[in-house]
Image 1 (cartoon, one colour):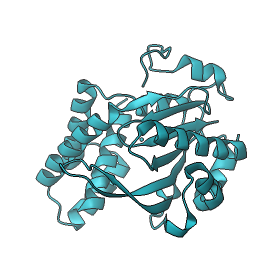
Image 2 (cartoon, one colour; image 1 turned 90 degrees about the horizontal axis):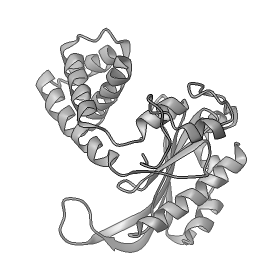
Image 3 (cartoon, one colour; image 1 turned 180 degrees about the vertical axis):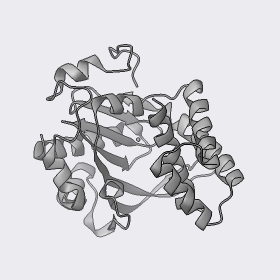
Length: 260
């Protein structure tokens, strides 16, 4: 469990460097495993991961996994107002994404602003990575106050160089190269973990999609697990959350039809 906390805190540190993804009626056991998902999953092993080789083969071609024609059909938008961008600079393809952006003139509110502003309509496919059902269920649910404190404690350990974790040490080395102090890491990390807690309140289980799936009403993101591999779809195309969710599920089903 400590390694999970260190990994999460390391991810927060990586976000700092870059800037300077639960349902009550689901059946759970004592280890936070969704029993229905275990029964329905192909592997039957909640700790198995990486078996969906088809999905993993798309890590270098996100645009082919969710083609333009499917996005246009799911959204009803015009190609004439569409732009695309492939974010694949990072070495690890798990961090890549392909984005469709439409300038439809939608007006809406942004956090921190009182008045409405013009918003782009966005569809993103990203983050294909091996993941077990155990990890999926631990990752996409509301964070408790105890877990928040544990994450902040782990971040402090990383900043002080007391973890012995290779990834954490590598992240700290980069921080030092960028002249980011321990105090900055702790302060910014605390802010980010607080934001993560707010986002975590938005997770809602989605039934009948893959081995397990979860929609976040705060970020308009759909997380889907199929045969030990997770992918994400973000659909911010409307001020109506249900429309965003419906489009995301439709697109996820297209992905799953390719890689069952």
